[in-house]
Length: 181
Image 1 (cartoon, helix red, strand yellow):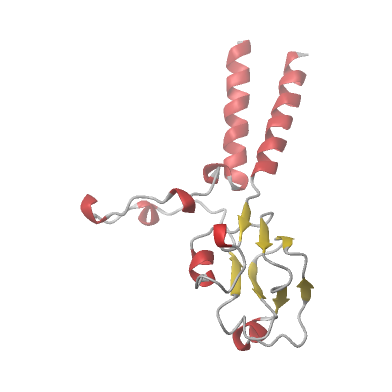
Image 2 (cartoon, helix red, strand yellow):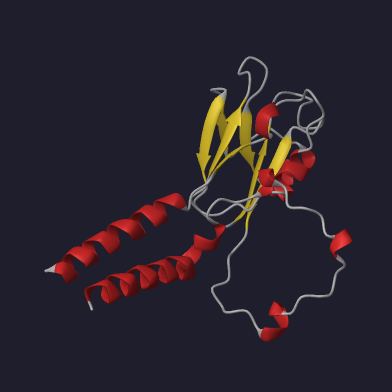
């Protein structure tokens, strides 16, 4: 009976870890979605590690802005004539459901051209084990290594993916097994 209870607890822990994978990103961080302050949304997106399941939040003044999801060609030319979808609440949450580029811009005339556009790129994460050469790191003097930025940290990054969940499950199972032996 104790083994069944342990299995149920393990399942609940794994379900909780699965839910915790998703991150919520506010576009532009504290500045939000705006043309004020010269926000570099390309730079903002480059510092993030977007994954399937994440949510992208666009916060803005709905009187002056909107959010349009567009194709790559429309994104490059700031063409707002036929967006894939348009959001206009001022607090729009977009759930990422697939890999690849997700292009957004403000459809108010002149805003996209002023830089109010963002490319959310969701990379595929390889489940293959790294090769020994990939594990070798080059020699770098400590004085040239920048300190990590807390704003760029991704919570629970070590637990992301199948291997992280499997490792957690194996650890819990072995702990449960040895506590009963």
